[in-house]
Length: 193
Image 1 (cartoon, rainbow, N blue to C red):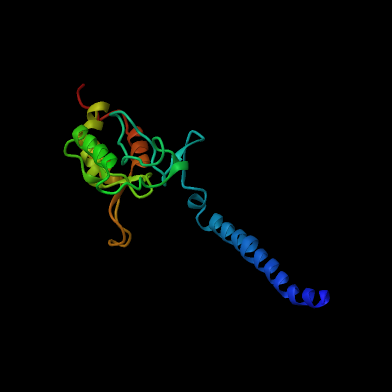
Image 2: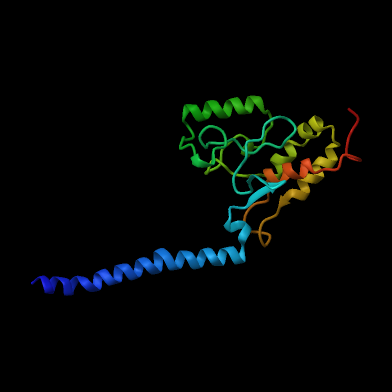
């Protein structure tokens, strides 16, 4: 009887171990290896480094504050832009906390485009619309004593168009835009203080 049970269970055990080895070990190892060869930057989280230090990722919004930088969309991820708490707010359109937050943002930022007043599904969208970036040009240019046309040209250059002209929406990565802003040459773009 025990021998019959062992005989019946053996194929199931062998198949379980085999499938674990294939799908749990071999397949992930092959895909990880291919990703490292084909697209190492994306496979490692699209990290951005400056002077040998990781300063962020182009996939996750960073919390920029002050007038000298372009700001991302509001965050719904924990306190601030916490990548370990990525999620939407789960507040419905009639929820009082959401209405209060958006109303306060509208008062503080009159004329702001909609994506500067609402959070994204992940709460950490690293991109804004080109309109939202252009809306911030005057503030950033004034804070840095730069010609608004130079900052607007930087936004135009940083705008990523839809893939194949129709897949997705035009967008601007805020981290990359702010890094390009920090790299602007000091001569020829300043206005009189």
